[in-house]
Image 1 (spheres, rainbow, N blue to C red):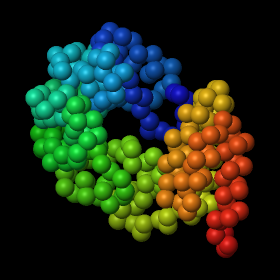
Image 2 (image 1 turned 135 degrees about the vertical axis):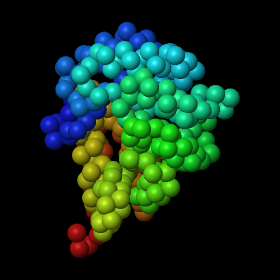
Image 3 (image 1 turned 90 degrees about the horizontal axis):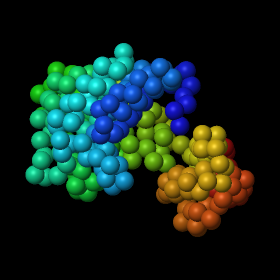
Length: 271
């Protein structure tokens, strides 16, 4: 999963953990072995299996540990160290500016914030005002994250918070075109055309092929990829029926056959 092509630079590798020494070793290893442009420390992941090991947003319960990890990683690599945080572990410890300042003082060169606590997971609305507060408090670039589902959301976040950049995560599920659309909106360029059914399913199939190439076991890769098949086909005519069939597939050939059959019916006549 750490393979990438030369044209993908600049690119970072994200690591997580709660042991400063092990994090330093990991940073040194990936820096020398894979040659990324920066090392990102994940203090934001809210997933139970990660937090259970005190990783991700679990570290936000101990800012002394956060400081130790950042310093250890920064000393172990010649590459810039960046961090991803949340606004706190829970409402009682919510302090986005304080956490961000701690990261900056420890050596972080760039900070990305998702303005929810770990306890909130993805509930409610992200408090974009907290991104703005962090932007005002820090001297390093601040990236905003949370509730970006379209290019217009990215535009609003940029102008409401003053953030230097935007990270898009869940909003790209089944919609990789969101990145080119966002770039156009932020650059003030004309919005690119929306993908038609043929392009959508073509990219879906290419994505599935890449999942197999990176995953190793073709059957396991397709089973894991089923959620993406659901995202790519969301909103398509008779999409529910198509998804029902796709969710039963165990091979790339089955996926390809279903998508080709669908296009026989729904592909635009002039394409």
